[in-house]
Amino acid sequence: MPPGFTAKVGRLETFTLPERVSGSVSDKAIADAMIGAWRRDGILQIGMTKSQQRVYQAASATSRRFFAQPHARKEACVDGSSYSGYIASGEEITDGVADYSEIFTVTKDLPHTDKRVAQGWPCHGPCPWLDQEMKAVMNKYMEDLAVSGEKLLQLIEMGLDIPTGSLTKYTADGWHHMRVLRFPQNNRTNGKGKKGRGIGSHTDYGLLVIAAQDSVGGLFVRPPRDTERFSNWEKSSAGLRENEAGWVYVPPVTGTFTVFPGDMMQYMTNNFLQSTPHKVGLNVRERFAFAYFHEPNFRSVIRPLPGYNAGQSPLEGIHYGTHFTNMFLRNYPDRITTARLQEEGRYRLLESKELRDDDEPL
Ligand SMILES: O=C(O)CCC(=O)C(=O)O
Ligand SMILES: [Fe+2]
Image 1: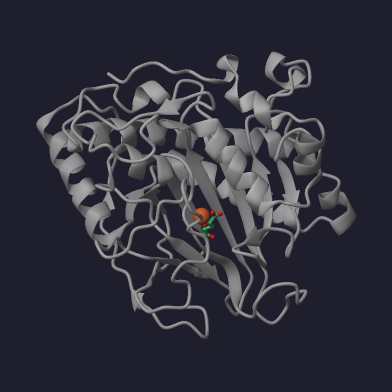
Image 2: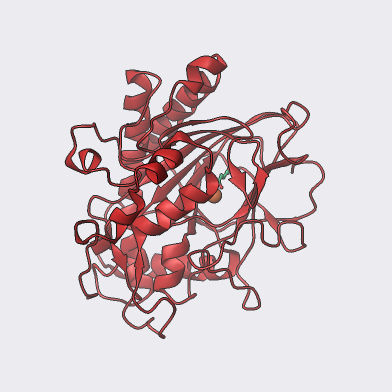
């Protein structure tokens, strides 16, 4: 565990995803157990298949190669129309404090000729890869996790006893994205953040987070409690309870991903599955991690799920693209992408019909 933290050491339940979710009795048993684990622990593990281990290893090697580049080379990986690319240590803000994480963010890689980019849709644009090898390896990793993400959603539909497609109807051309992360050793920081803090406590934005970490350790989660409610889409949950008791350390386990729900899952299920608060501490060695986010389509308007509609706020649903954009504006106030979005007055496009898929729920 990172020095300076006191937390219970988690013992996470581990699941094996079926090759295909068919609706079988065994799928239903897995689905129910997963829901139970998230409601109890806020997080669970899934075992990597042999081929996933290879894809993960390749992504890890590429991540290390990227972060080992000279600063100028990394810094050049920025794009003015998307939030893809490099974020230096001390550049990201969580609850007003700089994070020490060094990040490469991957959002949907769209050329300037793409209609959505040409029309100035917020957050849409190319991914400024270091090189073609990085592009190929990271895309492969994300495509692989997208398959696991869909299986997980199908299992959640079974576990929640809701009609097939209630969740997966949102993820056609989903706004899946990823953060490739490096955390400096605790005594080798640039002094811009807070001692020992890697990333402040926060929740993530969409349906599911599928995370992976090396053997160093640094992640903590906050299991759901009825007495604590975070609704990040209404009021920022960043920084909340960061220094209070009640955090659980997530020990690295080779060959597993950890999975937890995001903000949209919490809203749709009316808090039955809560978006899990988590934070990262700096350790005595540098640490590498990935956070993949399995998300709705950018244009989706998210509604409560059948049987989980208790009139939760907001009644009109949540436009995922607006929630995503708000979160990135908040975390990267000084980034060129934020400045351009605001200067060019493109935020208001989020209100336009073209950016909203407002189907009624199933
Ligand atoms: O470093 C980790 O394990 C998690 C990182 C994280 O929470 C994030 O990138 O949103
Ligand atoms: Fe996170």
